[in-house]
Length: 344
Image (cartoon, rainbow, N blue to C red; front, side, top):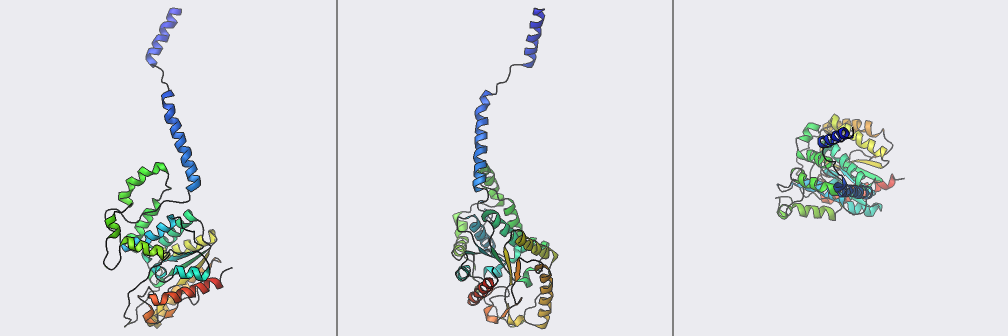
């Protein structure tokens, strides 16, 4: 009986093979646990501050539009002071509001986050969301736009240009800079954008300065940039009062954001040249005002600048959408007075 049992045990041992020891794997398991612990600590300490998002791909010289947006992303990722007051919107705000002057007039830490009409209200909103995620909620946001240009864009029209597509892509791929993501970030750099070479940073771009020069200028001016062109206003421009449903939906989302995050949103339209004040244009602008007001007036968190439309001398408008530098100080002072009058 013992002999039979012994034979059975030997056969079972032969079939099942030698037992596997986990002891050699313990150092690896401990290493994984330590890395996980370190990353949890890093997430809890730095999880709200994402590393710089890169707009430009690495295979070419950045466009001027990428430089403008990159400057805003760089500020969000920087160690500079958080802003109590942000300028948000299209290039009318970028080139129409002096952030340094506004800061001195209001006494509020200020940064100009204005970018382009070509990213749409969605792009403006997503930049603000990125700011809030990384830096916290500002107390006041000035939404400065040229609605006769921006509001008519459909989503399809905006996506025909690269700015919104790339901004969506880059913000969707922004990651908290934990150690285990470094390889992934390097692998994504070629496709999604990454560090640029010295030649790409310093390459001239005809009318526009180099990428580095623009970033330096935008950083020094706290996000603002000046338009230097002049338009010969021989004939009145024809303005559109159209509002796409896509832009209206995004405007409502921005308005919802002001309410949910509890910040004050000031809605301000860029001035227009006096030559544009024709009967036909005013009819289109009033239709647009009615459409926008139906949304904006629903929110206690939003204050619309009055008058809704402002007209200035023609030579103070560099283009239909941009103030000439001679008019930027006046526009900034007007905005500062309005903010101070309507602040709690």
